[in-house]
Length: 185
Image 1 (cartoon, rainbow, N blue to C red):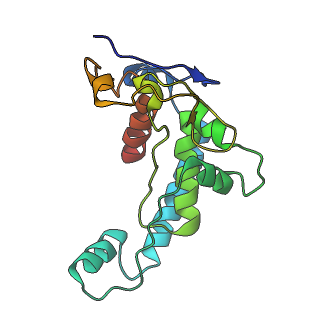
Image 2: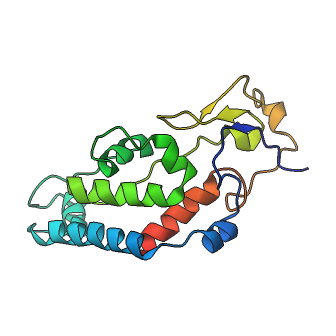
């Protein structure tokens, strides 16, 4: 049986592209590389000013040992990260991060640099209902939301349903690109 995809209203230009297509089409300009270099420089400066590295602090916390301060780890979504990127001007919207994966990377680097977080985290950028037949839509300042009736309501609805490929369907290829790119950076 084929993957049952719902409609995604208001999808951006990269929605539905495979991970391979994203890798081929998303490259950094020299200006963007400089911006990323600056964010990374600030993150490294933040780390150098502390008594412990984020990993040392995390390990000490997990092992119940003395640490220099509490672990600062927060799970923020693009809607919050975009505020750090635009300096709280409320000019760049969450939807821009969903439409343009490079903005998602830069906004999370900016947030990590600004707030001295232990690690960079990107929460789910789609709840995935559209991957199983439910219609969804993008909203300006928030995660995509489902619209209308859920397509899976019973165990029987799961019968014959093929699992979508996260490297090819919906927003998840963008999420995987984000994860791979931030790891590379």
